[in-house]
Image (cartoon, rainbow, N blue to C red):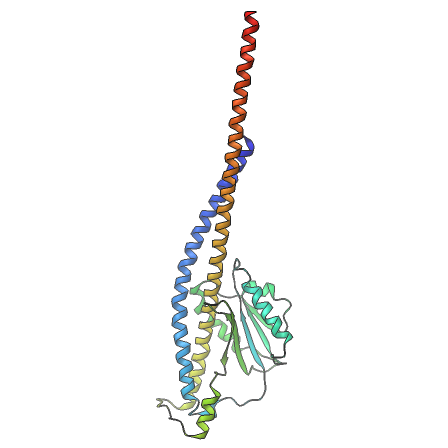
Length: 292
């Protein structure tokens, strides 16, 4: 009896955990839909700014950076929360492979975003800063405002970085994507074509230098929004998958406990019947002795 009672208590505890996980899953689904809307709008924004840059720079090629020095700043976007599988370890593995290759500059700086990523990235080199990241959509905007100051104040070998690139998970494929934010990537073919013949000059309401500086600021901010929304959406989707997998395992375990509890109950009933039968037999023998 006590064994079956323990099984029932354990089953009830699992059922309570399952209800909590279902509530968490529903909340995560609401959050995921909200992030999806933000992500799509930022995707349109960054594509629009890229098209503007592709039209602007061929007409004003002198504004393109000409430095030959390479001091790139790389940013890895991980997660602030757990329960998202290999989300952070895949970033660490990806970067370790880059470190082994010859594709990285000799002089670079690395910023890690996300507490869970930081805890897994202790072996990475040239980390100049690690910061806590956003965990929900509402935290992204205030985070980026502060993060822009962090990026602007970063120095590599006592100098400002010559380029900024961000690495993050794509929301649809979960693959790690690299996006260069500064200098704004421009098609070299368009620049070469512009040198051969004069391209159409965009009609500007401000001088080209002011427009260029505003374009840089907007592209950098839009790029960060795009990267962080994409990363958070991918993280949310992966977390949903793990929660569903955990719920499936929990339901399977509850089913097994139900079978064990039913078996134990059948054994108890059998024992009770045997006791009754043995008691009945003993009464018969006692009655017979009294008659004799």
